[in-house]
Length: 73
Image 1 (tube, rainbow, N blue to C red):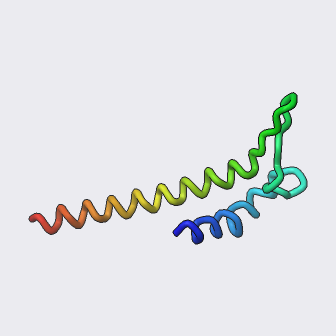
Image 2: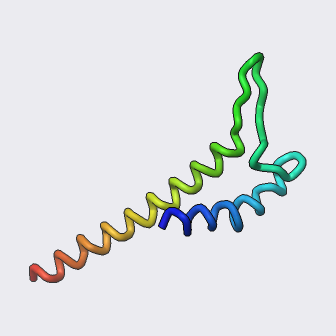
Image 3: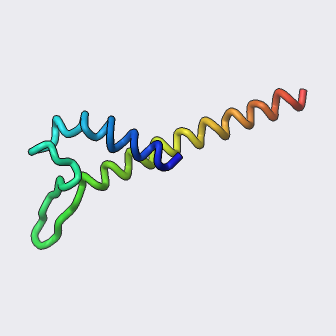
């Protein structure tokens, strides 16, 4: 499941987001504040990946709870 969601993020979602990122390189998109460099491109990719996995797990649990209630009746 992780490989599938990573592929969805890296191959479909992030290329669409690169339209809004300077130089169309989300992997190396950074912000430098003083001596600190924030790699927000990689963070955004990880965040989207996490959200996709969380939604899938939520839907699976919701379905299982619903099935359990139906079987109890």
